[in-house]
Image (tube, rainbow, N blue to C red; front, side, top):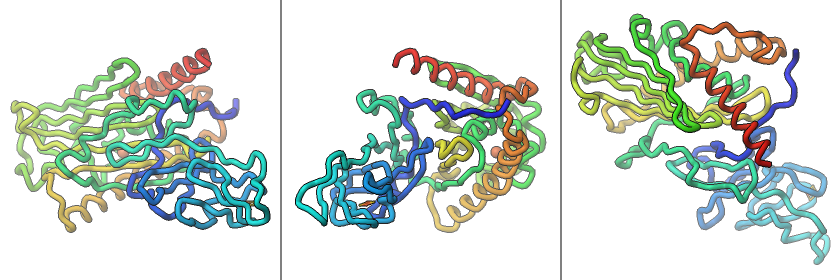
Length: 345
Ligand code: FES
Ligand SMILES: [Fe+2]
């Protein structure tokens, strides 16, 4: 069976961008198939409007800023940050119905989150906590990778880190230690955890320069998932037998936002093993992350999706290995939440 129209969870927060991306310039980003215009007003407040003029549908992002107004590049209607048309260059009368949809946007932890559902249900308390990335003034290394695959395929990849041993031979692979690890997938309310515990293994790569290479360590990879695909990864290692809080720990955000039914925005960020920012260290960290994500994860995720030749995921009858339970349960939980949302409507 071929794929139908995508069913998205609407009443949840999606990452629209890094806060640093929202500025005076007009940024267009397609989210859940909708063209969205993102910018920041002169007093620093983030704004999100549908990026389509209601007159003849030109993209407002191709227009110009005039203070807090956005002027359409086609016939010059001007809109405020709430999406109201406030100036018509051809008349003192404003055209009826000439508004663009305004989307609720909220910033937290250096991330601009957008609510793609009922505006009255947009509760900032539902935003997953990524404050650990910015703890003590840290400014994580971060990026954005476009993906030619639906967002769930990136979730499959992240909730099942067993792929490290095969996909990341050029970067993160750790001499087979994941084969000896214990893996647990756990649900807590509507949150999932997919955690690996690898006791007494040689010091993993993120500790190099801090621990001696070959030092026996206890190593863990704890992935936290919130709908739709907001994941926080803790990568830790401590000298074998020592408590976790003595270890070398880094945190990574992996947050995937559907662009269309077949493409996604993959936002990532990483703190540093030493906790200290340096231009040279950050350049190396950025290079290592982009090598792993863009040269290793992205090609295999995109190739796997393309290889379905239009067949829906479950119809292709995926084989189950056990290690893939995180991705499977995330897919099932999204379906459950979409069903719950439909019943509440
Ligand atoms: S298309 Fe925008 S003013 Fe005509
Ligand atoms: Fe990966």
